Figure 1 (cartoon, rainbow, N blue to C red):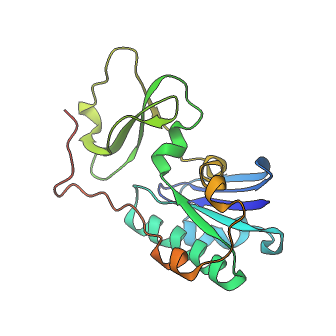
Figure 2 (cartoon, rainbow, N blue to C red; figure 1 turned 90 degrees about the vertical axis):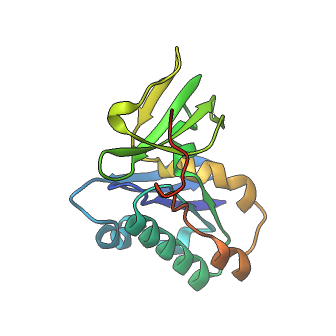
Length: 185
């Protein structure tokens, strides 16, 4: 199975093509390039794709909309199964021990979520970057979510699946916002 994965939740655009779980092609495009401008060239030959995986955030409102719209359009047009995964979980996927995966929120804030050996240990919280305090032995991991990790998180749901319009159109980004969201203590 060939899975095309993308994540546009941060200022970086991450794309990967995996075949049977192995990375065939991976590309990370940084600022100032915008996801909407680079996705058409970065995605490659869509005839080689059997399924779509997309990062759901949390992250940039516009970035999430662009990435999810691109993924849903491809899935709909080519009748491919689609699945989404947490962008923070993708960051923590290959990190051993206790880590706090983090991405930029806005105005000096971070989206932060704890993971132990890739398994979530709590909810997404929002905090000021300067105020992050971690438990003893924990590490803060701040990097663009790797599209290959998004694909690996989605493969169990994509294996053997077929296109389903309900699944495709119900897929929604995680728009964690400061309003009423949990604040990191």
